[in-house]
Length: 75
Length: 345
Image 1 (cartoon, chains in turn red, green):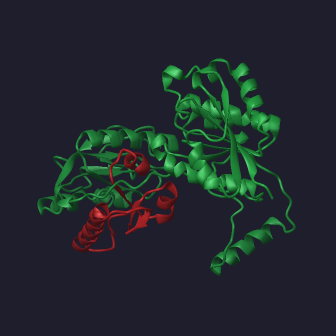
Image 2: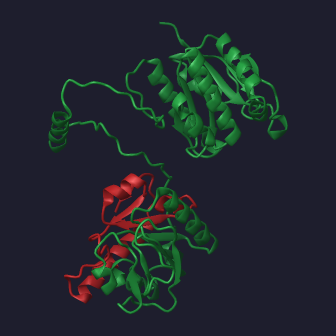
């Protein structure tokens, strides 16, 4: 899906936990996340810290979209 | 050792004869290179010479296959080649089918290797891949500059007599071979080499996936329109489109207008491939709507697309995933989106 969207000429960042899978399927901008059932959170943190963690990951994703890449890149 | 002899098969278009209006020309041959053969010549001049080029109109070939086959084969054979190059034919359907058919003719009658180049979806590939070494190319002749060196590389490997050839799309042929050591020992040896950081070679390579070149980066994120997409199954509470928990056959498009933060009341996951407790408790953990809305308000990026797209990536077929992605990508593009964040679980 990542690839098919990118094929339309849209830069896309894949936020996912299992980076090797993302690499195998061919995502070009990859941001590793926390865990499979909660990629963008962590129920063990208090809500404020959890949100901060999420914010950092999304910022990293925006940064990835702004970064020119020529090959698969893990941010 | 003298140079090896190569014959090149191309269609009327690449021979510079003409486009569709000339697609009915009969096979013809000429000594030396024509069209893209020139570029191959540059790449291969150390090891081989393109001694002749055979040209046939794509329509002629498909409409008179028996006649065309015989003539083309005779023309190719007249040059006594060691190897035949067909194409590259990119995503041109009739050209791909003709090039594939020529590969089959050469393979079955002359028993010499054939190297071609096609876009993976070219129908000629599926029909004829076992008869040649077909290198993956882009879908149009604009990718010629990438296709030629890749094909030339396979040609060189074949002419050098390498036991193992790399860089082509699998032919779908399995060859039996016997090894001295049994599988269990080979597997353990491989594992030990891997752990020690030494080189090892898998005996069962993962399926190969096609690649897409990275899209250009967003120039100014503070002006960019961002869209959220997810394969983690984030849907409005109640899963209104009944997206399947596995082997999804569809995706959904949902409004972000009235959602600033997911709660157990407004969102849930449709995904059946992971423990849903955490996502159902707070779907922001899968689709980060709460922070996205705050960051939007803070001007950290330009604007947010009004909808998110979601499906369930759980045993979903590659064909479906590709279809969803293509449709979603097209819609996003039409709606003026500049960049996409896709989350997966």
